[in-house]
Length: 118
Image (tube, rainbow, N blue to C red):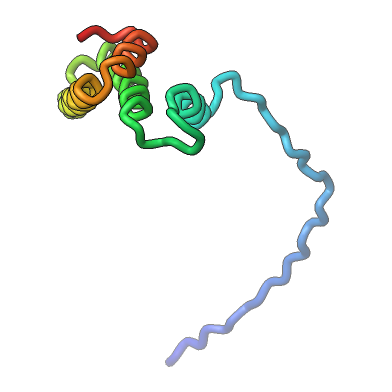
């Protein structure tokens, strides 16, 4: 004896949309991270559209270093980030040495703005 299976279909009526959800926008207190980067670039740029001069690179690296130092204070065992920090510090040091060799006045200005010591 074979048992036959019958297919059953069920129709369900969709419920009408009773309420529309309004978009809620929450204003954040903290500005987006790219806003800080743009501000730094504008402040340290030597000319309009300058994003790669040593001054800009040093300023951006300093901002990243400060952020990473804060992270390492709360996470002292994060050795992967510590290694990245050491790389950033050495890259900033190389850029500072280059700037000091090429133009001492610009070097002193950047070091004073960023409160760096040589």
